[in-house]
Length: 337
Ligand SMILES: *[C@@H]1O[C@H](CO)[C@@H](O)[C@H](O)[C@H]1NC(C)=O
Image (cartoon, rainbow, N blue to C red; front, side, top):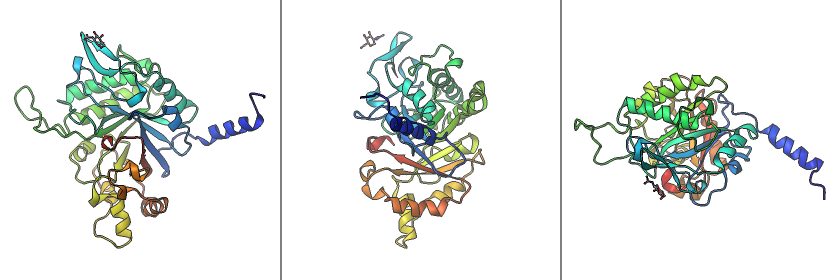
């Protein structure tokens, strides 16, 4: 048996040539998440899907202000072994040995043309918060040194080796009762505190240290407006994209949008309201986030059939601010996104 055949070569060449680079101004982008759960396949398997343009790796779910040793912590499901970095004489929660993520990021970018973002927050550990702007800026500096281009490393650990992500996603779902207080005993506005400073540190200062590629910031809000985490932050911080979760809230969901088209209810998908939101980035792109399967949603009614997705996309695809779809995969546990 020859180990190489012409048809295999053609198939490989086609696979590569059809995986064009992410085109942020296109309206047909597909975005997904990877990194949670005990049974997930390697990141590169997600990247082999030629329909996908952007993969968010989740999550950085412990923030420096709460993290042991003052470092952030990570959870990438079964992709890491469970050992952690030590800092200042304590074990942090930053996963150390994640043997394939780095090489898979590089393959995703170079072989498959994907854009890879590191996602901060998530819905499973939701007690994280940033105390103030100074702390938000140093959080950005740490992540940039640890997960940005290896050329800018300033002594931070590199859990993914030399591989660097293409930007950062903010999936902020924290809910802390009672609200945390600062050293003066004053309540911290934990839903918004520090995020604009952190995001603008990335966008205004850090990203330009590597002119070799374009870096992005995205957010993953729920669909209800005003949004306690994003509405004020996005007015003063630069987001390139919002992957909006149109599936946890019945009154503004994609399902409400379909029912509205069908004359079955007065509620409607809140996509147009998001497009009218005040955003520092006037060219921000909004994505319709959907469960990729019935079982990927908390409630199966949030799943839309392909025909329903087309029906919904037709309503918005001519809008300047429409960017595509975010699909939450079956493998992500319900509560994390
Ligand atoms: C960190 O955890 C490892 C593994 O449990 C342990 O051997 C080590 O002593 C811990 N280090 C510190 C500083 O607690």
